[in-house]
Image (tube, rainbow, N blue to C red; front, top):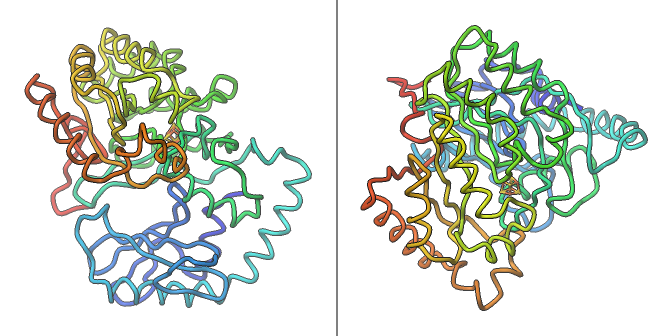
Length: 397
Ligand code: SF4
C-alpha cells in the first residue's frame, strides 16, 4: 500500500507542481514523519499535517474526516498564523471532496492485506524514497528503508507521528517498538532517484526507524540502499545515524563510500543520550549498550569515516565522563533537548529520572556539555546535519 499515492489521491485533481491557490504550490506529499503535504507558500516552505480526526486533538482546519495543522521549516522562517490557517482550510476543502472514495479504497485494500500479512512486520512497496528535508537554504534528503522501529526507545517521538499513519491504513493500535514496515523495493527505487536528481546530502534517518534495527540483519534493505549509493554515477554525501551495533556489519561498505566521496562526505553517528549504561537500559532497552556505541565510533573512525554523537535528549549520567570518552572517538557532537516524554512517562516519573523531564534541567545540561566539548576542541552542532555535510543553496531550493 503506497501511502504517498493515497495522500496524492486525497488532494486530486492536483498533482505535485500544481498551484492550489494564488502563491500556494503543492511540492510533494510525504510520509516520512507522519502524513504531510509539502507546499511552497509565498516563497516559503510549509508542511501541512493531515490525520484522521480524533477526540481531544486541536486542528487549524478540518474536513469531515481529517484534521489539518501546519508547520514551517523546523521553527525557522516563521509563517503568519492566519496565512497558515487559510492554507489548511484550502487543503481541507480539496481533501473533503475526495476523502470518502479514498477511505473506502483504503478499507478494501486493508482487509485484503490483513488476510495475507502479519500486522507487525509488513512487506510494503514505495513509489519514492528520497524525501526532501531541511530548509530551502540547507536542504537534504532523508531515506528510510523501514517505517517503524523495533528498538522502541520509550521517548521516541516518531511514535505519535506513525500512529496517524497506522490509523489511516486501518491497522490496529500497537505499542511503539512492536511493528515495522519493510520497504522491499527501496534500493531499486533509490537507485533510479539517485540517477535522476542533483546530489544533496542523504540522511539515513533514525527519526521514524533505525536503519540498523534487528530486521535489517535478515532483510538487508539498508545495505542494498548503500550499495545503490556506491554504484550511482554521481557522488552523494551520506550520513547514517543509529542506535544499533549492526552497522558494524557494513563497515567496509561504508568505508568504501568514504574513500570514493571523501572523508568529509560520509558521516556515521550514534545517538548517545547518556554515558551511564543502566540509564540507557531503562530508556532504550533494545538498543546497543553505551560500550557498543563507543566501539562503533572507534571502528569507523579507524576506517577513515567521520564520526559523531547525537546527544538528544539528555539523560542522567556523568557529563565529564561522556566528554572524556567522546573526545577520543568523534569529530563532532550534536546536542538537543527533550521534545516531550512520549512513551517514557513512567520512566520520567521515577524519582531517579524525574529531573530530566524538566526543560530547565535539559537546557542547563546541554550548555554544560557544550562548553566542556568545546573546551576539548570538539565541534558542536545543532540541527539536522553536521557542518561538514551542509550544502548551502544561495536563494534556497
Ligand atoms: S532507535 Fe530511533 S527511531 Fe528507533 S525507537 Fe529509538 S529513537 Fe525511535
